[in-house]
Length: 290
Image (tube, rainbow, N blue to C red):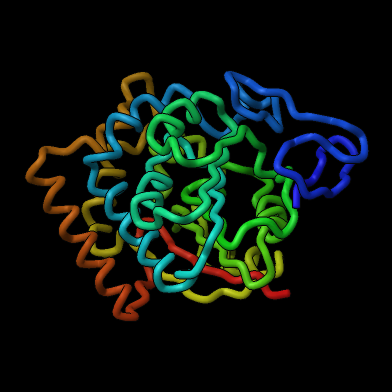
């Protein structure tokens, strides 16, 4: 079901025209825009960073290994999903991996920044995209699965977002999340990325449960590489005019391949049932309990 953000009416339709008030969301560059005022300056991220990410993601160890972990989570916890929404899809890198793994799934991507969607549309032409504020999701019990990958930490009102995600999922729907964790890992990289927080595990669990979800599985990742991450963050602890946000991810090929191997080994261990207690990031899989 769709929700009219103008009058709050719920309606079922293939088009975005409210059956009660007649409101139709505008289009920006041909994309349906549910939050026009934030399309170019939504806060919580630097839109110019999308171009750098789009060049990096296809080869970088961290983005590739995270995709492996996300697709495994799909297979393990919602293999029969027919519809998926990625909230904060950025350049569409995760969505492109899901599209390759699930060619028959109905894919949807949302992003508050219009700049990111231009890359996502090119990467995943089979998906439907919208400009949207995750704090006001215009859907009710619409999707089998929703993903938000390294998104929540950018938003001050993260519990509002979790409540909105719960509402947009169908009964027994599954939520897939990744977030950065451990406040003691805070560095200039977090400041540059406009993070509001790095999560403590209990903090995240409590917020998930208060929103109505049941946690199915959780584990840290970037665990085996945590010493390398600590070294990198220590060397680039201060944010200044010379700070290079891409340096941590722009590695010589041999080192990038080694780190990819280590993270894929870590993913294999998680698939076997090992839950890492600490690591640079956390994966959480939760279910909507009706």
